[in-house]
Image (cartoon, rainbow over all chains, first blue to last red; front, side, top):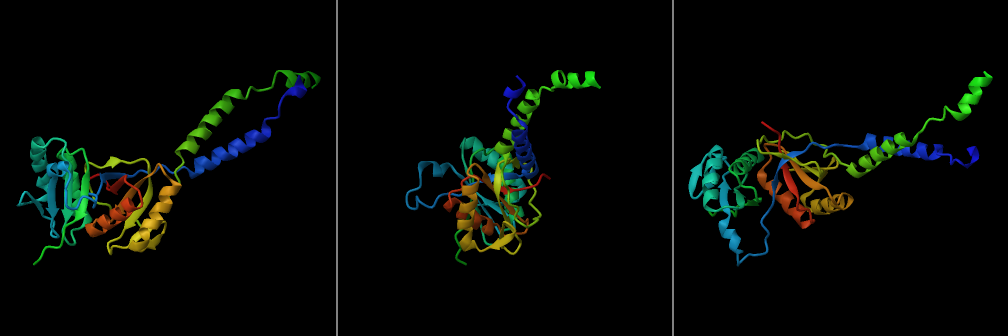
Length: 132
Length: 133
């Protein structure tokens, strides 16, 4: 009986070393963020039907938001988006960035869009250069 | 002494099976959850946002500094080379998503540039990293 037992010690050694390796290299990244997507370039001349539903806005370099031709503060984007979303349920949002608008400003706008209830995509894109 | 010795042979054999079960389960857990994250080498002052959701699978980290330089894996990468680097990282961690860690004051157009390159590299799950208010 005693001789028929397999010696498990070498396997245990390896298993323990692997276990310790994976414990030590385990990095549990705590990344918090707002998901984004970018509108595809493909449908240049024929926008898909759902494109009309998108809530579009522009962020100016001095951190104002142009939504429906009105110039509003980023903090007011949420309620406005909520109102627009009631008219267009399930709409995505498109944020156009003018010039050198900084990330804090754009993220604030994205935050407001999410708080306004947009569950779908928030697309970021660069606004075409305005002729001035 | 003689009595002790005879006992050691028969009764003192510890049953290792339950411990082995646990060790194997832990091993498998750590193998499955292992994502080899490569830090960007940049410690950005991330923008504040309330609605940030946690992204536990973020494994491709891209840092964007105030002067628009792109930091990946402890080094600065030119915009033209970003696509290749991201594609390589995505191949190493196919299930991982991407996180853009931009400094608050970085121009947002640089974030858009990196997003475009990532999409071109086939990475569609992208977040802009924030910190809670």
